[in-house]
Image (cartoon, rainbow, N blue to C red; front, side, top):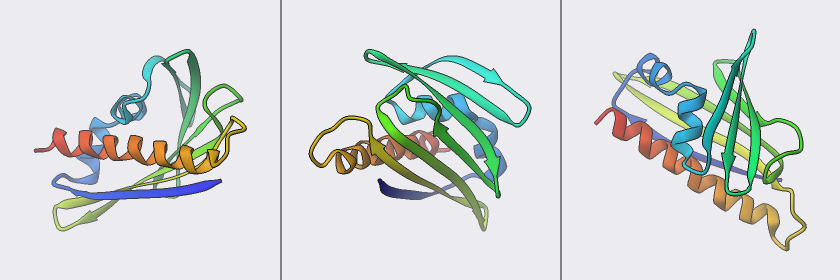
Length: 135
């Protein structure tokens, strides 16, 4: 399992960012998958996303002032994937931080390193989209 962290200051409040980037918008902003189904449950949101040759359910929930999401079940490219999205208010701006732990579901040499590299790219794309929305 590998962990990656990316962060950026965004010229918006945490409320503005979180109201514009709900779970389906976050999945789309990451850029690897298209949202197919959104299932709102009591305290969670399940987003079923699809990409080339696969579908995967992502489970989103709020935990300790962070949006936490994970690949649910055994479908998808990861053996395990979990991500925390945190918003820290800083004088009218917000420090947006993604932390993600991943392990690849394929028996490849350096598989977890490859999964972390891919995940870091997705999270940086999400930050690019969030920043562009408030430029």
